[in-house]
Amino acid sequence: MSASVRMAPGRIDPSLPPLRANLYSDTQTKPSTAMKEAMMAAEVGDEQHGDDPAIQELCDRMAALTGKQAAMFLPSGTMCNQIAILTHCRPGDEILAHELSHIVANEGGGPGALAGAVVLGLKGARGQFDAETMRAALRERRRNSPPQTLVEVEQTANAGGGTVWPLDKLNAVLDAAHAEGMRTHMDGARLMNAVVASGVPAHEMAAHCDSVWLDFTKGLGAPLGAVLCGSEDFIDRAWRWKQRLGGALRQGGICAAACTYALDHNIARLAEDHENARILARGLAQIPGLEVEAPETNLVFFDTSGTGLTADELAARVRTMGVQVSTAGKYRVRACTHLDVDRAGIDLAIQAVREKTRG
Image 1 (tube, rainbow, N blue to C red):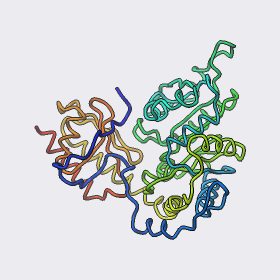
Image 2: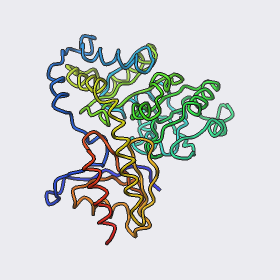
Image 3: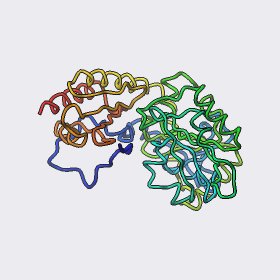
Image 4: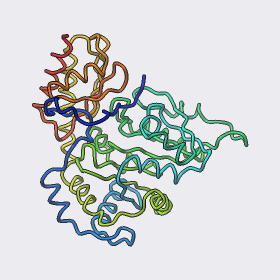
């Protein structure tokens, strides 16, 4: 079964009703009026020369939040992952990551295309693997074996159901990697969802990671931006890859200000998204033919095979009622709660699925 979330091709069909509950992804969030005002008020400059105050403030705050020495502002989370891989690895190196991880399924083959690195996919329930599984994947160090240089984890684990790695399990994996001389990277796209759900601070979750990043365009509601964090040496080397892949941002503080606004206003409220996900899951579980995975954060996955409908068929049907979801396999649907979907939207989504599974 494919773990990727299929992207809707082409333009929006004008015959469809307006969206009333967009559960396709938390990337669908739009900046609030207050966030836009913060963007317009930002003091900006040239990032290349270190004189964009808004970017510098954001990077300083993110370094402190994650417990790292330095940070770098980037347009997207995928760029954070790829630049981290390019910085940690050389062509021919092997990366250990979960077989359903974002870098395997959703980044266009970036590790191979850009870094020349190979990803060895590890198995594990709900998007997580343990230290024993990682150790079993280690190769004998020989001249004809690929150097295993990086272990990557995803917090939360998207395709695993938005699950939160328990701190002891996470640290056991990362410590085992370091014991083998490997580096460690955390895809922290939804790191703050994990923080809010578990109560574990971000700096504790990332303490054993050599690099980590946070995406601001998901549940935090910014229109653009992610921040990659690590040691001063790591960020200095990562900057060269930023230059190679596009260069510094000019007056990028307009976007950085949105991310800073999100840090101040949109983290604690992630708990509301998690509660809405639980309400959605409970409602869907009462619909005959659906098998619903219990959510840990803001992602709700459910299986449609018992209804006689494929995931794509159900998604098309509920769209006619103004509800949008994504599909993650022939029978697997993903619904993602976020700040632009309120309780009324959740109730509508449950109603739409119930009506459209009846025939």
